[in-house]
Figure 1 (cartoon, helix red, strand yellow):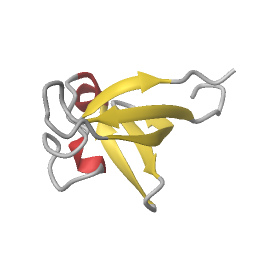
Figure 2 (tube, helix red, strand yellow; figure 1 turned 90 degrees about the vertical axis):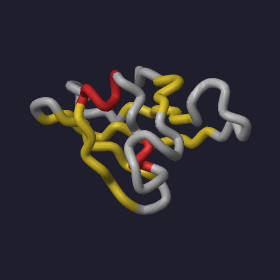
Figure 3 (cartoon, one colour; figure 1 turned 30 degrees about the vertical axis):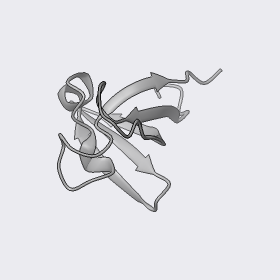
Figure 4 (cartoon, rainbow, N blue to C red; figure 1 turned 60 degrees about the vertical axis):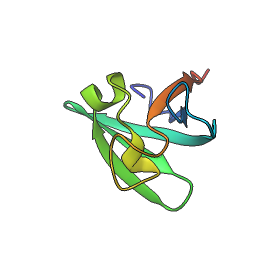
Length: 79
């Protein structure tokens, strides 16, 4: 992101969840302790870096940080 390139990120249901769903989003920017994440469902959301670390990204796909697809599971570094 420091080079101005978005970073693809996969978010998924927590380990052990019965549905095993996953979704792709993009980290677009970092500002202070926050990350701007674009969801291709048509919106962006700011989350804290601590939410990223703690697997609390559910608000990207749900109405709560701890539900929905809350765990970052993979990051593809741009070249």
